[in-house]
Every structure is written in C-alpha cells, then in structure tokens.
Length: 235
Picture 1 (spheres, rainbow, N blue to C red):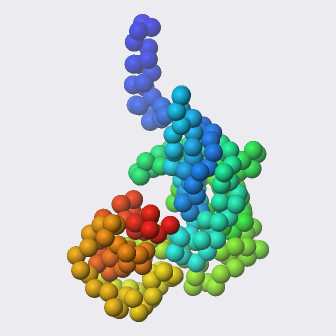
Picture 2 (picture 1 turned 135 degrees about the vertical axis):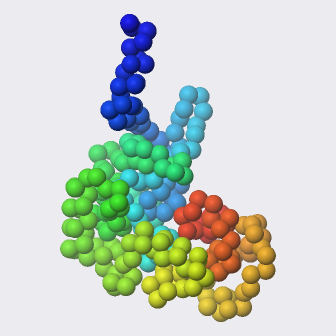
Picture 3 (picture 1 turned 120 degrees about the vertical axis):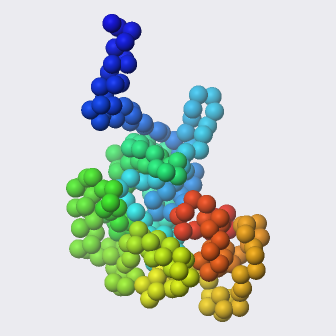
C-alpha cells in the first residue's frame, strides 16, 4: 500500500485541480534592472552561480519608451540594484521568467513601486486587494506617473496592444504610443526605407531598430515580444 500512496495522492490532486507546484524562494544579488518590473538576480545553486530573470508579480511598469518609463526603471534600480533581496516565486511566465514578490528585508518592493507611483497594478493578474489600495493612494496624491497629463497615462498593457495593432496594420493611430519614442526623430523616419535588414547585427542605432520593427514589420528583432527591439542596443 505504501508503494502506491504517492501515485494515489498525485492522481487525487490532479483530479481535484490542486497544484503540486511548490513555492520557490530565491535569495541573491540584483545585478541588472531591465525596466520598472523586470530584474536579473544572481543566485547560488550548489557550487555555481546562476542568473535568474524575474518579473515582479501583480504590477506593470511603463515601458522604457513610454512617459515615466525611464523614471520607473531608475526608481526600481535605486531600491534594489546591487542589493541582496528575496524573491517569493509565484509562477513562471511564457518567457521563462520567474514571477515573484520581491522583498528587501521586510520591505515589499512590488507594493513600494505602486505606492510611489512608479508602476500600475496589473489588474489582469492582480489577486491582492492591498496593492490596489496602494495604487489608489498614489493616484489620490498624484505621485509619479499619476502626475502626468491624462493623455500620457496609458496603461502599459494598452500601450503594447496599440503598438502591436499599429505594427500589424502599418498605420499609426492618434492614441498610438509610438509617438513617444525619444530616439526616433520624424526626419530619420521619413528618410529611411525598408532595405531588407533582418538582424540586430545589421542595425546601426536603436532608432533604426525601432523603425525596422514598427515600420518594416521585422518581428525577429523583438524575440521576447516586450515591444523593445535589439535590447543590447536599446537599453
């Protein structure tokens, strides 16, 4: 009977819809801040160290080329870059990133980013009413991105959707966030033509990479589908 007990338990768990995935806790040093909601953590595994990409759970920061995007990234960097933190992993997303709550000591970094107005609550994936309350406080006090003019306060998920729609149709709507790219001047865009370039190695600048992604439809420049092409160039 004892031999078959684990199999029986697994079968019952699957039948009842209970997840067998154990919560994962990682502790390590923050070695990179990609933007306001994504980092790289250096953790020790056995005798070697591994870099782990982590997406902060329940929040969505402005993209780097949105209004407040760079300030959001800087705010997260100021909080944790070079620091030892703990990541309470909830799940793994489709890009292979751990989705986690981050803690520096007793400070909840996800909540801090929202409370200071440097990130939105990602309503589609938010489960905690506490973080929604933190967003309401930041909004009431017009902190961070909540102090921006209304037309510039586009939720990042809508910004990405608008961008993909514009790329698919080859048009730019009045609400498209593409106009916010600080590295892509209208003069350069007008003078450029789609000349068959397909790889990041062929790009001479970040603005050219955005041009080929958005105007020429070269999706291979944005392999992780985060809206940012050739990340080694467009940091």
